[in-house]
Length: 160
Image 1: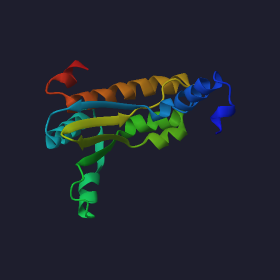
Image 2: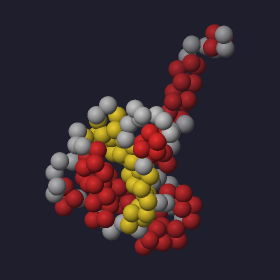
Image 3: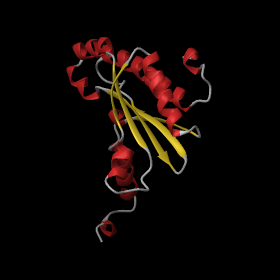
């Protein structure tokens, strides 16, 4: 066996590096769960998006598309894509590579009756202080959208 030739102290170190060294803030997800009906969560996510001055650019009905291919028991999955061109312009002037984060998205997934709402956050601890500031602001907005979609409180957007 490969591991049998390694000193015992090295194995935990290798596992630590493998598990935690490969993660990146660029892959940071923010998620909430709710018991609300799937359709309500989608509507609330779309409402939160528009209330934060973003424009919905597309909706991907992943779950229903997979069902149409023959997987009749596949759960509902939805992706809502959205953008704010003013924010995008400001962001891309500072860091053109951040085009890879556009458009933003919120995902809604039904898993055994538990609805999960998620989004991918932008990196905010980089060597570019201007971009970090914009990323922190955008992340705050993205989190508030997810929280609103998951919440039973219709006034939660007013609190953020």
